[in-house]
Length: 286
Image (cartoon, helix red, strand yellow):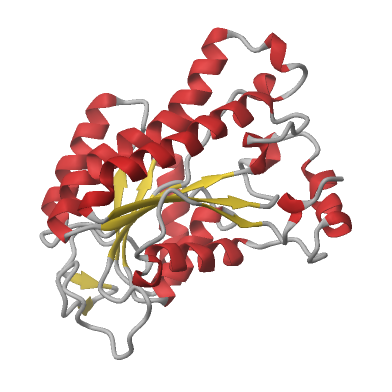
């Protein structure tokens, strides 16, 4: 069950803390008392879900977003596994009115501010992933850029007042090495990820004086719902084991642990950085 308001009850139990108060846990984690907004949970195989589990383990209070009713139903099934109250908010990054409402809801829900934002959103039409990049049409190109790249700037702007109230924060986006290398059947998404990574650097510059850090995690191939739309994902997973210095595929838990580090105070002087979680495959030249 998803809690509609913090500080009320969860599964019939009274919750003794207010969102962002840091109270109500017997042990301390790396993110204890921090408020994290996580986007992009589609199902249990989502990278964002691996991050949510890791954040919960480390004591963060979570606010998650969903794009539509179908995905909310998926969340309703997943969130009880965390055994902690989680607030859910409707958010479609292509809807200006919902973006405004999202920012307003954060102001109400987080009196002490937001400490962490996870951007795990990307989309492109399947036709624009296959074939030749040369054949990409304007509408498909713009859609991939809007959802996969511009949304980071838009979400950062929405969360910015809440992070100011918290005295700083950490923003982490998800990317892939198709941003800098040609990956067959990645096409327009590779170009969008390049824009996303450039946005990370410019946002890091803009927000550094306010102690808001902006980084990205470049994860190796993981068989998620989004990856299923990329032709050749099975081959990429096999190639990872054959070529990477560490001959293993990664898991969403690995990405979650890396996100914990970037979101924590241990990384307080790391910003504008792309952290590779790919068993070292990005260093290989063959």
